[in-house]
Length: 442
Image (cartoon, rainbow, N blue to C red; front, top):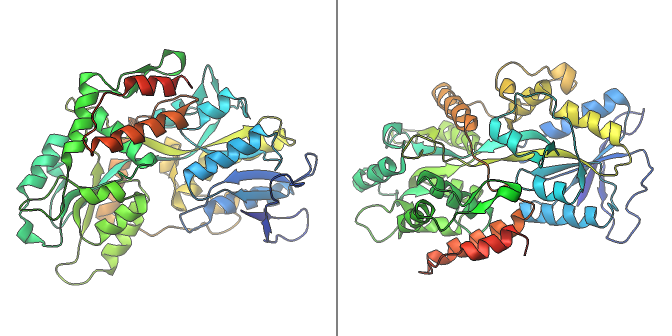
């Protein structure tokens, strides 16, 4: 791992890379004056997170170190859990947690309760930081599933429900574009993307994999609607080469993640893509580079909703938490409040993230106050695409749905991935018993 060292004391700001000491070595001194924040990489390319932290450090004359965690979510969680359970040998003060981890860290008292500072967070984001009767983190940036489509080939009118989407795919004439091999591409590789897609399929059918939270949580994956949703997902996946029509979901999705599915969609292999908001920028860039009458054009809308009009879009994102026993508790809380304020989140938005606060979707980034200069901007979206994106994003965030809130989420998602992946091989046995065991930490 690399540590990015920001603004050392009162001298001029300097950046340098440091190798994190090997486990067992003297990684830090608990009483040193460095505030440490552990986080994954900033994939926007704008560096906005580091700029927000750097400016705070300069203003308060506090040395801050950003400890970069592994790129994969599983790697990040494993490293954080191992370190904090071992007594925090790297002296982390703030940790950036995936929305699904907060309950686990709270149950083990690896983090400490915090004041979220306002009530204008998106509803599902607010739920994601609560465990028991307390808030254990503060939403920083958020995410929600969206449906991107080839606007030069289809329109958004037939995509509102799964039945309508399926009909749109079946009615598409493949001679219009011979490169198109599937209706939809998504993330069905056995990792967290598969859990998300399974949950959204179950929600579309009106079911739940797990209903309730905490001690009231109940496994409902074997109930009729949940089973129907999973079977709909499995049956929708088809060979992209068999013809004559298109499969609703291309079988290549079983080997795709967020980035590789986007790359395949950009190559023209599908009518639609289920992905996170980050995809909008790359699609806008691709459309801008295109030339000629046949260049692809892209649109965006909400994911298909339930038959009764409810949401079937999963919440993503990250929460900031203060490490229990931090040697710099007051400073850590001050930095947390700064980074999750509406003003800072407007700058986070301009840097390419989706803000966790409703109020941060509008208004200007006060760059002088929050980053000490010009705020970085992500790629500007075309006007029509921007309007559709903003409309879809806001509507999706209003009623996005969280994945199961449980301190044993790692075991729960692993069980879901293993069993749903096996369904494509014909193993459709009920798995509520195994999932209940995982939910109870057994």
